Length: 400
Ligand SMILES: [Zn+2]
Image (cartoon, rainbow, N blue to C red; front, side):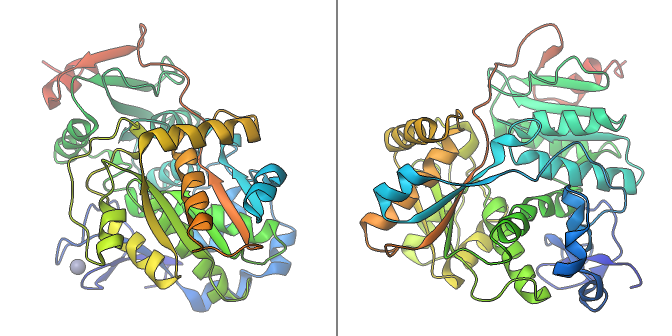
């Protein structure tokens, strides 16, 4: 392998050259990006970092793309939060992912997804979204002249912002998010497109760990004592942990890793349930009304579980009324209107303090993942379809 990175199977450890691939060709296991550590430690240093551009690509050695798409994602502020620090007897910082171009950390995912699409000659990018991912992918793809196909459950409050941009097709699917994912899977067997949760996922998900790189850099290349975030698919939580571990491995920040804590919603808590019962993940039928937390079959569930256990953290489930109250509290404190998943993370923090799991005086970072989606999916630029590949083709003007 001569490249700076390759793909490695999480199960059988088969290593392959980078390509859009849904799974390992040998065992069908999920694949992750793996980097050439001998090479990257020569240039990935604190000193080198000082002179680099204020984009995600200042961490290029640990990102899987040659084409460096920049739509302004990342470099969000890390701000001290005095009211909640006083209340909880902590040193609390908020990482304000609402400052990204489409108002959520999903812009980081979309940036790397679109870059990987360009690297591999993919001209159409497709994703399923219940919240902010659709906006981010549509914006990133449109900026680079790619086609974007965004599948959203009919009636969801997302993706409308970017509807109407050239090359962006927002399709409201009569069904649930899971129906959108099934349709995405079907389209994946039919078309050479890039799928953010499919063949582009190993690359795209790497974008999330740039939050960890920024947090450490903003703290003067230190790691906080603990980090709190929401968990739906578990990808953000697993990638944040991976990001901190990579900084330690590269020598940019000292041990130990932060204790990693995540929040789920009761009714959609397969990772929290597995953590509480000390077992592996069992998929559930999601019944929460909080769209951004409604994932019953978490793609990174096992990795998230491992991250919480290895760092002496925890993954907890909270009832929706508590999440609503903490979302309101976070809104009053920050002045932004956060997605309820940010409120869930705050709920986990309060729970950890009350139970004594987290000691007073700890330095804590809470990831405010994004703003509440602002508008419903409707209007002249949105086509409503059944969850059927033929309907997608008709909507795109490709059908017979
Ligand atoms: Zn394999």
